[in-house]
Amino acid sequence: MAFRRDRGHDGGVSDDGLLSVTIEHVDGDAKALLRVEGDVDVVSAGDLGKALEHVIANGATDVRLDLAGVPFLDSTGLTVLLTARTQLEDRGTVVVEAASHAVQRTFEVAGLDGVFGPA
Image 1 (tube, one colour):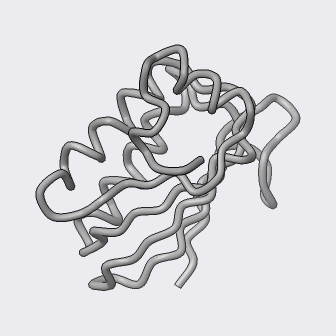
Image 2: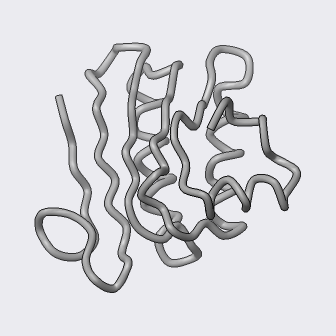
């Protein structure tokens, strides 16, 4: 089952950098993959948070994120990722499988490189 939540035009990320989150998760399944494209900032982080809350509430304990299409991640986005990690702390993981250079740099500056896995 794939769920696509787009802010902007149908078919993906709009030219103004709005967020697109594609979720691959079957309710009750432990594994979930979220592909994120666009800026994750104070305007859009709530959408990512809702997507993470949805998969966790529906049984995902092995949450994987593809952030290769994220050119910008601010502290609000970091908070969303840390919140999801905390929700699963005793029973699962949140792993960033792929990340853009900008996201990797944000993790480094925040002292979070290695916290979300190998990306």
